[in-house]
Amino acid sequence: MSPDERARQREGARRLAAARVLDVDPLLEDPATRIVVCCGSGGVGKTTTAAALGLRAAERGRKVVVLTIDPARRLAQSMGIDSLDNTPRRVKGVDDAAGGELHAMMLDMKRTFDEIVESHADPERAAAILGNPFYQSLSAGFAGTQEYMAMEKLGQLRARDEWDLIVVDTPPSRSALDFLDAPKRLGSFLDGKLIRVLLAPAKVGGRAGMKFLNVGMSMMTGVLGKVLGGQFLKDVQTFVAAMDSMFGGFRTRADATYKLLQAPGTAFLVVAAPERDALREAAYFVQRLAAEDMPLAGLVLNRVHGSGADGLSAERALAAAENLEDPRIVDQDGGKAGVRTDPGNSPDPHGSSGSADSGPDGSAPGTSPEAPEPAADGAAAPEAAETAERSVDALTAGLLRLHAERMHLLAREQRTRDRFTARHPEVAVTEVAALPGDVHDLAGLRDIGERLATGRPELPEPGA
Image 1 (cartoon, rainbow, N blue to C red):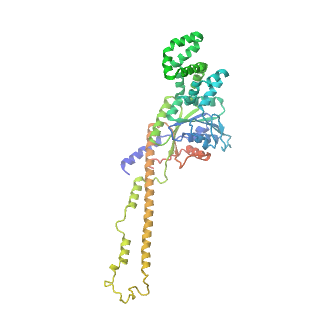
Image 2: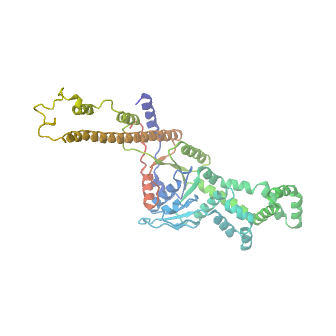
Image 3: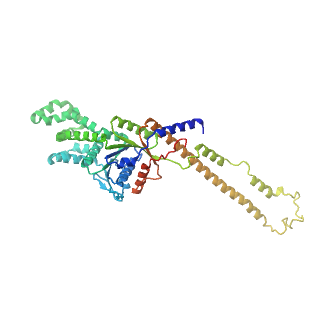
């Protein structure tokens, strides 16, 4: 190992010593912890992490609900539930010896929006809103609706005070940032000039309102009518007028949920893989949470690779593989066998068939003409052994090269992790080993939970 490599390892060890270790169990068992939000970029295992945390908390005596915003069905499959919807469903097979329960649900943003309308409007107005074409488009997929409805659902679950712990699985990090921005964006939308203008006729009322609409909006409605269509604009105006009395409630609840995320009982866990892009997203989210005064519990470094043979470096493994793969220049055994069996090199220079030691046909006494066969068999045995030896060498060389690739992967993950911990030494970290396959059941989730709680580094400490 070069002096530069040893220096880098010593520096990495110093950084690791300064890094904090995330202790998951005290966080989950603390009655003051009421909300855990898992966030991070896509494909890093947020859904599995959220489910594993929920299961571990439930089996330690807490009544838990896991809310996923990810439309994928992995959470339901791993918990043995046919499907998830907007209603929490109890998970069977959980060890309830400590008195805990585990429930799971998946956000249905349209149904959540409908529930808000139905609970905050009289039946006649609620029917008018639910049947409005603009509302139907808005509730089904308007940009930002999913994130706002997630905030609404989280607020509803917390307000019911039925759960000891709510674990939230968010969309990929950029969308999860939208999760934080939803209340502010909603306030900007509701306070925007377009909404105020659309609300003005309803607030003025009667002929005066229509006159105001005709005068104050003639130019704008003309343009919007050409671009969007007159009927669409009318649907928007009808929707805004019907929702007028509810806008204040939307804004109030959104602000309350935002403050709930900042409260001491909430903990954010950033989930990432030991890859450059994923940890860059994680660093961005860490900075954003700090700017928003959101309580960050730590980083879950997921799918980390390890090795039980990290004492053999990649360089030594590759050198050994090359030595095994080099062809032999001289085969001593084969040469000697050739000398013994080549008639042209016989010790008898005359090739006499009448020598006293030869039979009538030139063979040795007591042998038949078939006597050369044992010599041929004798030559085949070394060849078979040599072929087997070469096969073992090729297999060993292949394994050594695979080991070298694994060592390179570990070194790359280690550098990436060290870079993050050096820049964010205040962030507690726990590592979870990469598994050979996906998690499909409670046993797999339980295993993930154990790995989350051990706090044992999967990557070797530099210099160890």
